[in-house]
Length: 576
DNA sequence: GGCGGAACTTAGTAGAATAACG
DNA sequence: CGTTATTCTACTAAGTTCCGCC
Image (cartoon, rainbow, N blue to C red; front, side, top):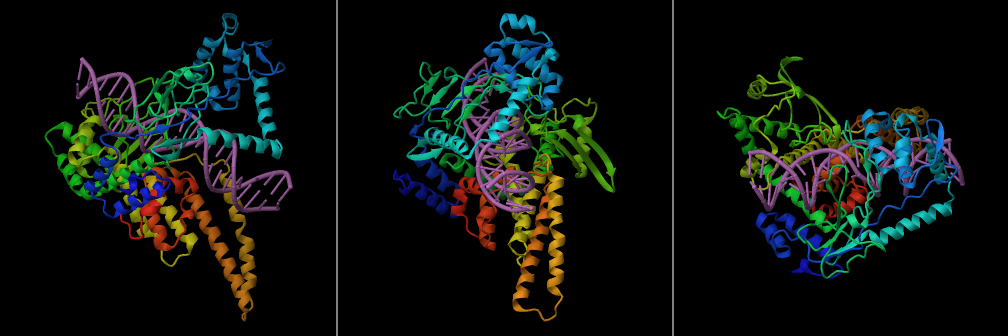
């Protein structure tokens, strides 16, 4: 078959094949196609790459850059100095004032010291890193001031590195690697109130590295004088390189770029699963509403949790090991203290007030009117419990997902987020797009639809530091234009040229207003995450085709590469 | 079921690159 | 053309899911 072709053009054939399938997205067709290519969990047949790029070795500080302990100059050993520089580089950051950060840092730093240093340096507060810090600031300033030629040289070196290490060959396709550089050593910066913040992330050596590639490929050589930890040939996984990180003891991977076949296919599959949910979501909703009445507490809890996941797009919420990570929760791990019940609030009945920290310690705050049965169940679940007790004490993600699997093949909690995000975009686009609008106004509508999803998924960002100023700048452009318009309108018998000029200015003015509105509404909302991970790109592609919007207005270059499959397959009548 | 490990997706942010401005 | 605002990319942390073992 065409898509098994090994020729250079097979990439195009592959996409065409996807396009063909998209018009007949039956499960048999796809599994047939997948089986042909990769029987039972086989991810590739050939994989060749150059291995990772290691962090540059530590360069000791120049002699004249001093570290002071208790007011006196102290020369540090190379190892201790390196760790000290990590701290010095973060001196301006709030992190370095936090008790936990300082405690963790100091403990790990001491491990790198010589016994002499260890006996001298016993109090972090007596350490003076300011000179080191100033040196680094000067360095980064100097980097900014570099000449064009010097900057060009660095750029070329980066390009060389990318060219040599940034690509691999997987099944006859040259693919871009997402992260071919090994994470450099430094101080761990967790998000939120992380118990391990400030700990030393150690330097990764070739001896830590597991290489994964095919037997018949050219195996990447370790750096001279070094050995890999292991070379394996596991084609049931997609990663090229892995190592174990020392903070949480978890495994890190080097994998392919989102533009790669293997990621694109998976992404497509994800949206197909969400579309299958669309077909049975009504039935599932009826089912969980029935389950609210169940005799079994476990079933009731499951049904209420699922209602939250569906209605509020909450994450599943796995249990976490206490003291290992920041205290954050998702649906199944909600505690009594995270919700407040209001039989009546602001004229609404049965309101649940949510207030908890979710992924990345982003706060979820929401007041939601729920159905009476849900409310009564919640009261029941909270009876005789302490604030720190689990709300759903008979439930976890594994129980929930097992149940979901029974309702639909491939259904898990996160599919609801994908489904609700994508269906919301589609609905909002239908509702908000005004056919008579010009392109900028239509794009504003698109962004608003996107924003509705971001709000649903609680995708927040810190307001940009220059937000107020940039708003002012934008506003200040309006009066001169308006004035110009006032002049242009005055003569009653305006020439053809003048009319055109007026029209142009009106357009500019309108564009400006649209821009200002968009920016204001976007202050604390991050659109990127939903765009990249939750919205079926075919919805956006179809919308662009339908309204004659250039796809570049919606997706930048990287995004177009990631969504190449969708851009190729979706027609203007695509329905999620 | 409970647990730990492995693999993979999803997440916000810092800083680089690029565009807009004067 | 240099400076500043905005956009994009790289980075890596933090989730979810699945699987094998007891």
